[in-house]
Amino acid sequence: MELPILLILFISFFWFIIKPYVQSKSRNLPPGPTGLPIIGSLLKLGSKPNQSLADLAKIHGPLMTLKLGSLTTIVVSSADVAKEILHKHDETFSARIVPVAVAAQPNPEATLAWVNGDHLWKKKRRFLSTQMFTNQRLDLLQELRHQKAEQLVSHIKKQCETGSAVDIGRVAFATTLNLISNTIFSIDMVDPEFKTAHEFKELVWTIMEDAGVPNLSDYFPVLKWLDLQGVRRRIRPAYLRLHEIFEQLIEKRVKDRAAGMKRKGDFLDVLLDQCEDDESGFGTTIKPLMVDLFIAGSDTSAITTEWAMAELLRKPEELNKVRQEIIQQIGTERPVKESDIDNLPYLKAVVKEAMRLHPAVSLLLPHKAQNDIEVLGFNVPKDSQVFVNAWAIGRDPKSWVRPLEFLPERFIESSVDYKGRDFEFIPFGAGRRICPGMPLAIRMVNLILASIIQPFSWKLPDGMAPEKLDMEEQFGVSLRKATPLVAIPSLEENKERDNPSRKYEPLNGESQANKLRLRNEFDRVQRLKAIEEESIQCSSQRGSIEEKPISK
Image 1 (cartoon, rainbow, N blue to C red):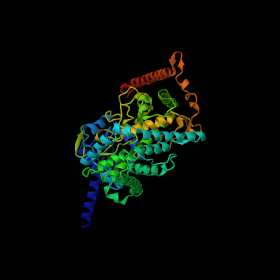
Image 2: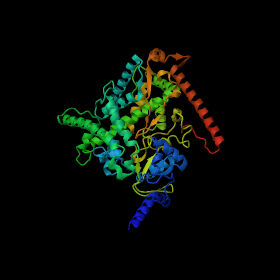
Image 3: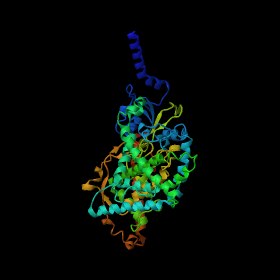
Image 4: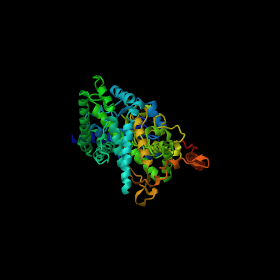
């Protein structure tokens, strides 16, 4: 009797091991690495899954299958495949797989970023797009954001007086936090000297890091209640603290409105107006929505600012170009305003190039196949998890010339944009799950970066050579710099430029501004020629690589 039972157990275990591989062959899944029994390819993810998956895609192709525990995962690593998933089959892949870390928050089904694309989600999404993140609404609150940027500049000027170094990521985070809190609540969440930013930064980073790391509970659902990696234990208190903070602010505003106090006209007022509609479904979701807005907005915008400054400090000539453009267009007598940004094309190109190389969310939030579907001749089964590797796509040599280099010029006079229509550049995603807060995020990053470049000269501490700057990444939901960026600001070099009579003084019948513009244009053309010549030489040597324009 015991022998048949053991035989049945052995056969069952053997079938459990080989089943994924048999199914992979029979179901015509996209190619991928052969994983280990039970755990599949989990060990191949490593500490930087964005890089590991990009390396695997070079072997198995831009549409790849991995077995991660019991979960079938499809990985997208090229612009063409991303277009198939996020555009052609957008509706099929609009669902989400919710990680255990996200489900640890109160009322997780009420979030916007992680829920499936059902009717209520569509209603919330439409509301955000048409009522909260419109240019008209954002313009109404831009003066508040200008004030926060000026506070940042004042803080850095105090550091100049003592010769102290500035933690760029820290001050950028505190500023974006205040920018968002003023847009939503019309208040500062941190004090002017940013001393109280630490708690919020720890809360947000705990959530972003734990929600992004591979978690055994996600790949083996039967284990999720054990919380083997302690993710739920660490992340839930952070969620509860944020909900507590937002609850206090919401309750105060509700009381103020009931007492007939003047409306502030911020996002919270708009949300509370919507909540008064009993059929809107917003009443129970307002706090989870606030968590989404604060976490996504403050962390990703600060990270992009830090990466942009890191790249500029590695290339001082690029930093000087941005600064000269700002001084040429605005001067140094008044602060930068959001309305100035359209007149600063090189600044905008720098931000785009930073997002190309360092997308804040390197693996876009995971999608889920709502039904079986064929993509590019391969079968993608229902309930598969789909990763779109925006990090790999932004560094794909088939789409970009010299893809690993920081070259803002590639975006000058280029139509490539981040709004989800150019699939080689999707830092905010694309399709119906594109980040709804993109309009605000772009405004904040451009404003902060311009504000800290305009009045200051920057250098690395301790005489560090630019090429020695550590550019290692730390993976989570967001892709942070592993080592915080610290730099020393100075006001000394601004003395001559602060004199209006000298700034636009005619020189041989031609204004300095025109001379500067012509010199920058000449430098740009010469650089483009050099890049294109090198690209052509590389193409002729390899024979199989097509010549690409620098705009890509």
